[in-house]
Amino acid sequence: MTDEPFSALLTGYMRRIRASAAGVATEIGLSREAVNNWRNGLSLPSERSRDKLLACARYLRLTEAETNRLLGAARFAPEYPLHQEQVGAQAASQAFAGFIEGLFAQLAQAMPYPISLLLSQAHWGQPPFREALLQRARSQYGDASVLHIQPPFSVSADSSEYFAAIARQCGFSDVCSDYEFEAALEKKLMSGSRLFCLVSRFEQGTPALREALAGILRSLSEMHSGRLHLLLCGGEALADLKYRSGDLSLLNIAHVNHWPELTLEDMAILARQRWPEHAVSPQVLTQLQALCGGHPALFEEGMQWMVAQGLANGAGLLGRLEDSHWTALRVHLVNSARLWQTFLPIAQAQVKSAQTWLHDQLCNADLGRARPYLQDDNLRRLFWGNLIHVRGHGDQARLYWRSDTVRDAGRMVLDSCLNT
Image (cartoon, rainbow, N blue to C red):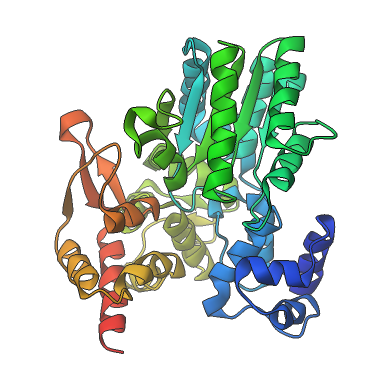
């Protein structure tokens, strides 16, 4: 939470991109009056409007840290809990250093087409710890050879507006079409050394525009072999471009990487960065991991709850907690809005079979064999919503619920929908 006035913060972010109340309202599905009430300080977003506020943050092109600030000003928990300024690139460079190094080593060795996809589930950000990735890229390629593209969120933007915005991010002027963007990027490729391009939040914009961008980047990568190194970051929509159309997929030649699971060691590093005034015993971290199942947002919520409850001793140590504390924390996490927002679309489905399917899945810890691409729509929703994850490798890889806490939340959501 933050003491910053929500209205002033929202107004500042809107002015930065010259967004009108009508434009915001159209994009996020609210009335212009509601947006003006937010901007003028007459009301705050209600609990049911969290998804609208997130859509607003994407439309305003806010970073993960800025999104968290806006949510905090509206009295909501952060969407990207591990992206607090106190954590940032420093924590990522410690907790995920090996993974990030491997990612860039893969790009350097991928010939003839150095294209990698970095896929992450909900609440990690896209990509997680973006600044750490950009810092690593600058050290390998040089500042002038690193481009960062974040496609516009607006679904009403046409092709010329979409590519003009992306061109500005790359430092290209007078670009008004996809062709002119492609020509400007090719000119830069031909005038110097190899380029690195990070595309974050790939899902933003319409499917047609996303496909056009992917097509241009792939084409240039093929034409200038080894010169354009691409790291495309996203989730379900990006995975679609790799798998859905088989050998005809636009990104079928790309290497796929999934952001790694949160380990006990990672949790310890992140806790030291995020809550430096508190030391956390290995026993507490182990029990917290069991409760949250490695879910980054539940980990943050659990830590924040323990700190807020004053469970640390005089030395700031979160040592041994009573069973009653763990019971209360479990109840708190089961009611997490992040879990409900993923379960609700399935539980509220008008098709009875969807509710029956969810009920049956909640009765099982093991949800079946993991595949590179999940064909079942609901199972795919749960995966990208970060409620299920993969354990094991190769033929032994299976899908499991992240934790019993998540399953209990699903049962509660389903019961609330069936009894209304």
